[in-house]
Image (spheres, one colour):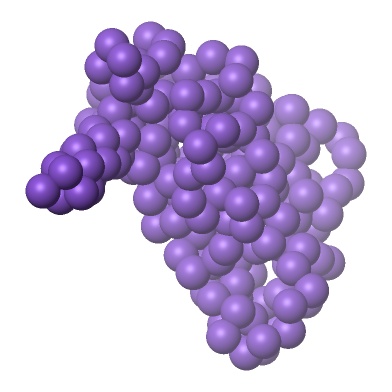
Length: 211
């Protein structure tokens, strides 16, 4: 009987962990990881495929003594853990040396999704090679259109983004982000700038919150 009660209490505790979160509408730790898994469909996040005990508090888990979140909102500890996860996923997507057919197919699919405007007409067998050589468009209008595509892929449409109440002017944000990852007047390969843009966008509240 004591063993059964202990197992029940442990199960309840684990259930609470999976539902706990920062206050203010942020996703639970488990849902944050699920959001990344869904976005990087089939790509491994290495150590971020599941939560470690050391990362639970940083990711918004609750204090089991009080039942309250360790912190009201994401802070420095969260940024450290989340940035590691984003780096893991984006590195495994863009830079993996694993040549297994299954992983190559998954990478091809998601890279084509992310970089679609720059890979039109590229056959699947050449997508991963093309992503390392394609240049970002020279014109500011084309660059901004590409950033708009990345924002839709991560955060949604301008209307959906504004519904969160965090970003009042998506167009200005696009221009600022574009100039940060693709400085004006500088010829650049698209892949690393794309990766940097994704790392920034995936830290936005619009991705981290429920809606």
